[in-house]
Length: 443
Image (cartoon, rainbow, N blue to C red; front, side, top):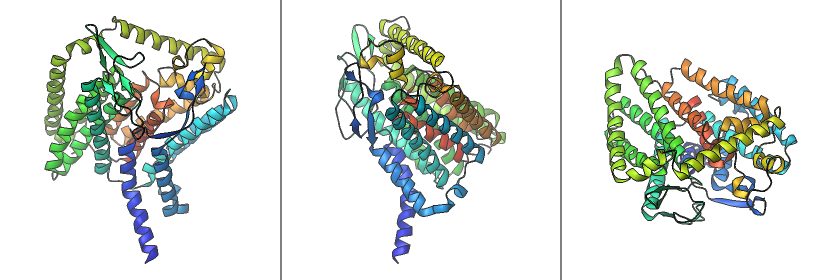
């Protein structure tokens, strides 16, 4: 009786635990073990943190080990070559520790990278219900959208240690805002550290939302679910708009275009029905986007106008960060400056006079990977991503390809998918979905 109860508990935990984990991923509740400091100021990228989601993931991995034991590798639903690529990438991340000026920080970065692989491993091991998984992502987005609206309406972010949120006000210097007509408009943060991170999350959420709708529509038995998915798409799309994140807007647009093309050219006889469904989402995007533009024309035009003061400053800073990355790469081509040690490398080798907040990673994941783990690590990273495209193309899993495409677009314009805990988890979540969810778009 006891053994049966234990097996039932393990089964329930492994069935619903991953959905809970994914729903909670945007929450930044954490124990800051050691505060990062650089040039006498707080430095986020040197901070050691233990997140609530870390504990939940570790707990789920322990349950998997208890449940499967020696059958772990045999139970993986991921092609063996994918694990070889991951292993090679992990090896070069590990090697970079020995070249890092701050080896404990590099070891912490390595641990966080391994936790990301742990999330991928979790998805590869369990037989999850893809509909429930997609709903958990969409629900998480809806919560963040509600927070985004509250922040935009009050023009402030309330502090909460339980949600991992710091206080932000539009009038404060250093807060992400859009300037228009002499006013400062707060960009929505949600519970995440920056609007661009929230925007990138919404880009993925919206694509998953569309994929969810198609899956429910193909089942032809979830009428309430179809309606709810459309309602949540509206909610999450407004959240994306409130971030005023250009990289997220572009990532979603390219991902949606990829999804549209896949549904148009690879749907066989179901092309007409697919286009009807896609027109629903297109109409929602046009209608909601037009209303948003009508009420907030000033901030939107200011955001897309690269000649405005803040946008000019933003572009100049990004160019400077990328130039610094090339300097670091020239000094550490083969094995990099060390995982998590990029900012310290800029401080030691380029400019030691800036305030702590100025030591940010290069705003391009591929440059950052090269700078931190070297050219061999970058090659492994690129081959790993390319292998994902090949596998998805062979499986005709072109819906998942849209997620991967959006992710890569965002990586070209920002660093958080490699440098921050939530970004690492989101990266491996998308990789996990693309390699484990068997979506068939042929009707």
